[in-house]
Length: 195
Image 1 (tube, one colour):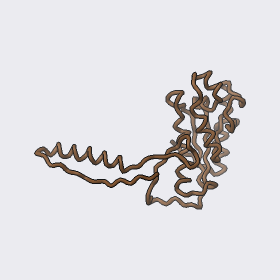
Image 2: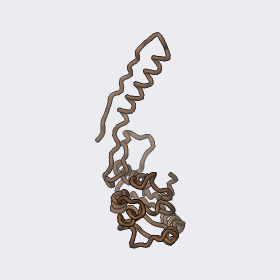
Image 3: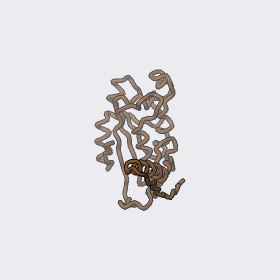
Image 4: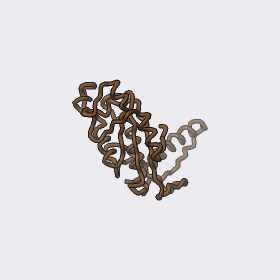
């Protein structure tokens, strides 16, 4: 949904220039926020990855290119009942390109996970044992994978934390190491997105 709002600048003249400037700034901020629009999810991932429409961008997004991005996920979410922001960013990458008209087969995303973020790839029963709540990332991960993305766990992290393949959410891959996965993906044309 795209919302269009007309911005009207109202200036109230008072005896004090400071008061006028402050009021004008506040009103401009309110109008600018309303005009910014609403972020929406989809069309590929609906569990996260909200994006904004960009009307008439001045930097072209060629429709005939391959957009292959790899993200490194090492930090967990701020609290166990919240989704990982890097997973949301991966979903945003898929959604914004699809919404901009890039053919779905031209957009690929991969997340290479290690360190503290590794527990966010666990099935509910194992996540609950660690955190006491269901895994809030499971729907987001499922939709990223269904949308053509890859989520890959570092085997060295898995070994050091006692995680085996049977504990992972469906579709999550297990690599020899995060370094191996990053190397292979880059050789396959994925660009590392530093986020």
